Image 1 (cartoon, rainbow, N blue to C red):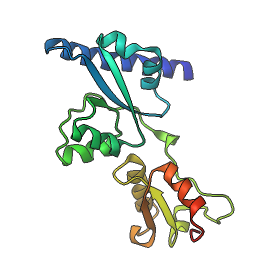
Image 2 (image 1 turned 60 degrees about the vertical axis):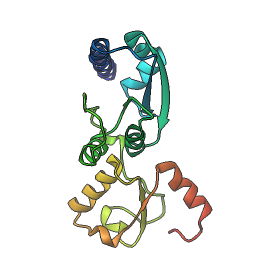
Image 3 (image 1 turned 90 degrees about the vertical axis):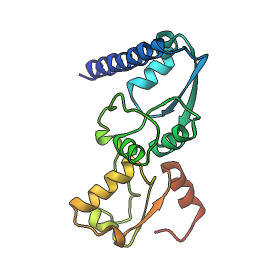
Image 4 (image 1 turned 60 degrees about the horizontal axis):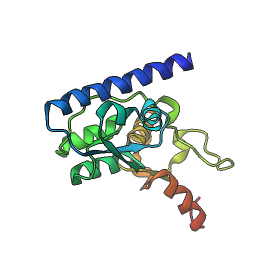
Amino acid sequence: MVKRRWLIGAALVLAVVAAVVSEARAQAKPAQVTIGYQVIPNAEIIGKQLGWFEKAMDVKINWKQFDSGRDVNTAIAAGSVDLGLVGTSPAGAGIARGVPYEVIWIHDLEGENESLVVKKGRGIKSVKDLVGKKVAAPFGSTTHYSLLGAFKVSAVDPARVKVLDMLEEDGGRGRRNRRDQP
């Protein structure tokens, strides 16, 4: 089942690359293309590692790593990347803000890839236990949207939780550097 899923994902990556290639061939071919990516388990990473994008597009690829879809949006708006992977929430936010891009493919469903994680021993067993606590999520990301959705489903007023605009890795550094966080 997992092997089949990866093969389907790889086929989708190739289909997207083929669509981009056919569009690119209709226009003047650039000397290089900059692609923004995120380190998440998906077929795009396989295509990157195996050089599929370079082979399909027949141009030099400059890969730029980003920590969230929000950051990819910023790079696209600034003109520093040509293609980029964002989740559904950042795509919607980008379109609403006029980021000059076209959605050519909705990536896979994240499912359990994005979850709320709490430190053991904090007594947090449900979303309602977050009231009065600090929670980190990159604003405008699928993670942030999922958190707000969890609040809604659990009937938690978001104003009763201190939500910090942080990337996941910043949250870990913040906890190590600050002693006042619960």
